[in-house]
Structures are given as C-alpha cells and as structure tokens.
Image (cartoon, rainbow, N blue to C red; front, top):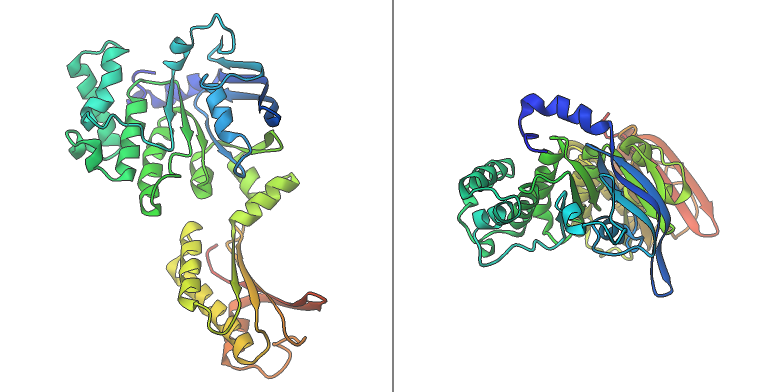
Length: 383
C-alpha cells in the first residue's frame, strides 16, 4: 500500500486493487443470548471499494464491523481478510489487524501525547520506521487532513472535529489495506461533521478500501461506490448509491430512504413557534443542498399555506411534511389537517393562494374520515 499517495501511480494502483477481493464473509452469524443480531451474512468486498453501510439503529452495523476486525467472534461463519480466515484459531490475528485501520465514534487519542506523537507512535513501534521517516509520513497525513499547524498541540487543545481528523490520520499512518469507520461523526457537533467527512473523502479519493457505517446519507451517496442497507439481521439490499437512494427495490429500504428525505412538523395551535419551523426548513434544505433561494421559496410557501388555514379557521391542528426528491429536484408540501371539508383553491383566492398556485406544478386536495389532505408539488428550480 506504500506509495498510494503518489498521484502518478494512482491509476495503476486502483486497477490492480479492483482485480481481487480483500474481504470475504461467508454465512456469518452473531447472537447475544436470545437476541440474534446477524444471521447467515455473506459478502465480498473488492480492493479499492468504498462501501457505505446504512440502516436503522440496532440492525447490527457496528457488530458487523467488529466481526470483520476480530474484536467480536462470530457464532458461526467465516471472515477472510486478504485470504486469511480470522475465525481460524491458528490465524495470527494481530498480523491480520495490521492490515486494517479502525476509526471509532470516540477519538481514542492518547491525551498525554502531542498530535505528532499520536500519529508516529505505531509506525515507529510496529512498522519499525525511524523517527524521521515516521515524522515525514505524519506531516504528509496532517497536510491531507488540513491540520499541519496542530502537529505539536495536545489532543485536549483540539475541537472534536479536529481530534477525529487526527484519529483518521493516525489510522492511515499504518498503511492499512482496509479502513473501517464506525459512525465517525455521530459524537460530533453538527458544525464539525463537514470537516471530518472531507478528511474521509480525501482518502477515499486515493483508492483506499473503506467500509463506513454512517448516518450521513448525502456523504454516503457522494463518496461510496457501493451501499449496503442492513435490516432483518443482515444485508437487506446491496447496490450502487444511485440504486439504493434513487431506486430502492425492497420495501424496508424504500421506507427508510423515504423517511430520510422528509421533514415532518406538527402544528397544534395558532401560537406555534414559526421561527422554529423556519429553522427546521432551513436545515432540511442544507442537508439536501437546496439553494438558499429555493429554501426561502419553500419557507414562504409553507408560511402562506399554514397561516391561510389557521387564520381562516379551516384548521386548528396541522401535520405538515416536506419531501424532497433527488431524481428531479422537487419538493412536495403536504398538509393534513382537521376542520371543515373543502378545497381552499376552489373558491375566491387571496394573495397567499395565488402565490401558492404560481409556485406549484400540481395541487391536490382530498378529504376522508381522517380529515383534509392538501398536497402541493413545489417548483424549486434545482434541476
């Protein structure tokens, strides 16, 4: 793996790595007492792949990673890392682990060592590099995570995002064939997530084999070459990011992806916190990279629809949702509300309804025993 950071060899390196399988899992199962977490899981990962692992909490994603690096022993099945069966008691597990890096939710930096010492310790002790060689490598890695100026800082002097980037650099200092990331941004403040994802993206672009358990769906879509959706004690659906996020085939995958792209908000009275709703819409738009102009348009349309219903006593309680579609860049505003039946757009329209009609490509109204349902397909102009 040495030399992968030299761009002149990158294309040759990637081609060679893709030709072989670096991880092979056969019929792996793992239970804790009566609780079955993984059942009969099989998987092949080729060298150079960047695989995102997504799914609801409690579906065995972290347990699966722990079985891959030998931190947990499967109840049955086999795990081959570059041809070595780590479930075989005769396998030198420490030798196999030397091919793998692991980045956890917690940073696990040595608090009494500087950043440079944290990164150079393992290469000097395990790879037998000289102090000068280890430092040169560490400096290059610090450049890649944009923290060269923090080389002599102590971990306690860094932000959470900076500490996680150092943890990533430390893992990469061992020249691993494989790097496992177990929700590397889950313990971070939202403002720090982007800088850590940028560091991971840097190494993914270099062709390092990666498995990333993450809840950052847009990051998974952008960086991964393959996405595994885990449910029902195993890999429920496997495909490219486009297949999983735009055209999932199985029911639970469809339901999970649909929830990720939907903002839901309940309004219980006229005195609700509209500023909070504005903020939620803004964050929703940031998540899906909807432009500020379109975000403002969505806020305006939501405001007009909600206040028209409330101020005209057509509703006292509203459940609204905003659903974003990646495929065509559209947003659907849905409002389910109580009150008398009747399509607001059937009668004389005020300025608010005129604006909503102008901003919508389609408007649908229905009424049933559960109440009124108004759906507007908003034109964001994103695609």
